[in-house]
Length: 125
Length: 456
Image: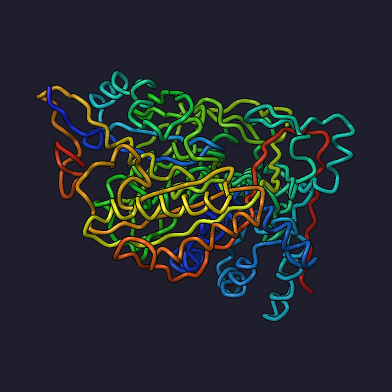
């Protein structure tokens, strides 16, 4: 197995849902989707975000898009105009999730590799 | 299909009030279109507009929209492009009057402007409560009495059929209040193709086309995870849906514009602000996002098929805003060496000095921008940045306390560690915090009203 950032096998988009945020994460290929389904448990997501997510994490699968949608409850410090945070709408939570380090089989040819931190095949983003 | 046998081309040129001012103009000038939609409303926008209207009975709508129409009306008329916008805010009639004035200035006789009203239930709120509508908080079940005396606005998300009726009655421009964002795209489809109120799969398809378009360039390269594959950031193309009568559609953009439309850019926008993907609730239907099929169809074209939907519920969602208190946020720039350690001393000094002055707050915030403001524990402890922005904020019911906080930042420039600067904007001022209160109302208690007026 090799350790890679989630960024190497998936992409993501996030936004606000009241006082919580959602992160939709989409695999680039079928093999990546199987890895996502196994790795991305609500427990792991909650642990990854640490103090950012104060509530529970819900998971919904979208096999047609090779995707999983997570609702991160109580993650915006009040949400909308009530929040003091820089990221009051959870716009950056998708990028935060893609920082997660995961293990993939050595023979898995990573779909997203190239320039800058985001495109490195391994290591820190 | 339209009378000429091709798909309807519907674009969105505004994802929120404050989006690109050039995007709508470029959409109508840089290629063929049938409809231009524009989304101006976010949850707190209505309360801001309600306040504007309290100060001036002619105000309370998106004034940017009137300026836009002033600039593009000749092109709209020349190319036969019709417009659907929720620019009416809390005063669609005021918006219409301003549009009529602009049309008269330009001699645009015969132009027809439709308005959709009936979404604003603020004046009826007490009567509705008396009639037994509980307006309990949809998210956490709190009783409405918690906030009733502080309510600033109350608007129903109405369905897409009144907007469609305005188009069928010949409106060239339709201005609504709080319609749903995806409904701006669905309304022309209902009007042109005659989709019925129980054609759930078709209504879901139009809703999902609207969802993909509603945030403007977010499906054409904006915010895309593989940003290094996007070219032409200075002239991003805004999205266009080419929709067939059977509800299948292609997402694309004008030729020659920047950006990228791919299965991946459209897929990301599909999951934006998503809840339970099998139950995307709108006043028109329940759309099932797990039924969507995406496939590439050449450069910058993605075909969307397979969409299923279910019956709408018998309630509308109501967006209520109320005054929650006051807040202020300010920042100082702290240069290195040891930027992070010095920034933490500045923060401790601010909070310590306020505590000694006897001022405490319901909520405070300390962020080190450059260290952990966005990603918290995921970026803390990385290599020490050369400089940091210290960002501090407070929230409280007391405006006086929030203003007192604002006076505590500037002194740090001379009373803190060395290399603190960037205090250029003056004292942070207390601004109102608007709370958002989602609720439900039975559909039979709301009557949308459609008027179409011709410019003479």
